[in-house]
Image (cartoon, rainbow, N blue to C red):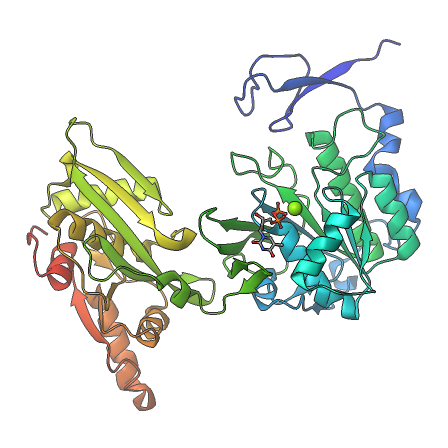
Length: 477
Ligand code: TYD
Ligand code: MG
């Protein structure tokens, strides 16, 4: 019988019956490759066949009533790093599979090896690295101060070797560094290809679920920001953490983009030092350190990262555009939102920004998604345009609407207390928000001084806010 071939895209994993120059799914060029159809033989040899190896599938088969299912809480344990525990939703869950993604060199291996140091005191840990030799691992561990005769290390990249080592040593925690170097030799495609990455992740998932091993998988993120090209891994695993950071600063932010056992809006902040990563328990202080004194074009705001209020500085540069074709860029702030704010500033704030180049940047590699940061962005832009500095101890919180009105945001009290904690003296905020705060304070005498020392300036629209912060601007709105 003639063997049929299928084609797949090495970028997104899309399968097509015939070759094409351009992938119909993701639009990438020259990424379609031929792969013999996964017939019976291959199928038995892939990750799908690993169940027989372990022979430990204890899960009852077939459908059952919901009421019969166990509703025991998942078992969690601490990783020894508070910031990582926080992002995981309060510690790692036993038998879960966590994918840690990030650009090469960001510090994924460092983070994992560091937690090994603590974890191996209570658990049996296997660190499998296909990226580094045993000697390199040892040197890194020395540098990080991880000394343990209990930590097991494997320097192999074949999936079968990894599985042999697991069944031999029976670890409780497995770290696979990285999914791109791991390969199943039963497949024809090279390590790092979509089918390899899928298959190896599947095998690790089985280990996690059937043997109750907590598995951390490291995955390099490519230029487009997706793990292993496509998003093929994300739906398979329990938890996706991404490790982000600016190559030029030492700060690193760990963020959960998927978590089956917790919230996804928490962040963990680390600093890369010469002896590895250290936790930054007070990110606001870190993000504001080194702030220039009273220079035009910067404003501080407070965003909520999960349950935690974090102060962020937004910087703007607005300069005349000689070519008449203004450039706009934004970094750490949604581009379309920035364009909208510029338009509102022009029409409702009365500043002629449409003929200017405008650049917006969030300091420290933070990505501001919350509309609560709108007002600070508008004020930073206005401050740069007018070339007038915003006082160093002034911050602004609020969402800006299309008519230039300010809308209140959630958890305003927590944000305001964070500003007060870090020594801010003035906060411009939507007028409605101040009423909320005052009503709250009036009803709670014990708390009535909660914001003493912080002057809350209410503003109804961006015109009022600009006047309050900069003492200038058109009243346009
Ligand atoms: P690494 O964990 O190897 O990155 P990844 O696994 O994400 O590819 O981190 C490598 C970078 O971290 C490298 O540029 C050097 C830096 N580093 C330090 O600054 N201090 C340290 O103690 C270590 C181990 C690494
Ligand atoms: Mg690495």
